[in-house]
Amino acid sequence: MDTKAQASFQERALEQLTVDAAKIAQLIHVQMDNLTMPSCPLYEEVLDTQMFGLSREIEFATKLGLIEREQGKQILDSLEKKLSLLHDAYTDK
Amino acid sequence: MDTKAQASFQERALEQLTVDAAKIAQLIHVQMDNLTMPSCPLYEEVLDTQMFGLSREIEFATKLGLIEREQGKQILDSLEKKLSLLHDAYTDK
Image (cartoon, rainbow over all chains, first blue to last red; front, top):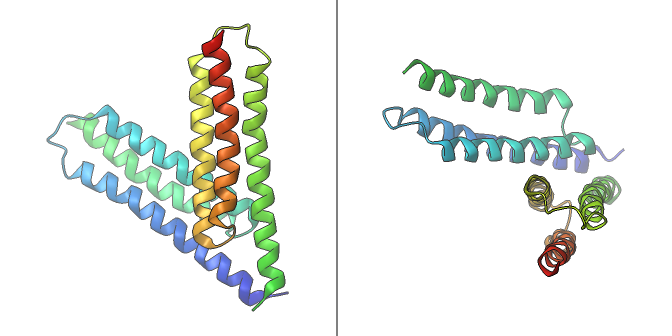
């Protein structure tokens, strides 16, 4: 089996997903820093859309065997937790 | 270069994208067959969402070098044309 080329695609897949997840985390971070502003429904929609896009990328990579299902789940879970914190921060305000 | 393993991921990427594009084409097809029914905004939103999801998969596969940019473009263009026909069919009704 061509372990080297496979590893290359697999490593790049995980790298790319991590980059895309970091972009969403950054969006959440910015919103957390601006909690004094009213909750913006458009912002939430953007976050939802980005989460959906990332979940599709992860599903695709998983189906191809580029990443383990568990790796994809961890990336999404970590973002879901951040989103939940953001939501709580607005609810407690 | 490990052409064999690379080809494997590349072939599977294109296959998977083709399968996902076919699902959207099927959604459009079903709607075309039901033109007598009123245009359903929810249906359009589902199609938009699915198109966005597919475009993210294609972008991801392109960035990884699993498919050529042109291949991804052709898949999306083909679906856009079908969507446009569906839209025209409603407009001309």
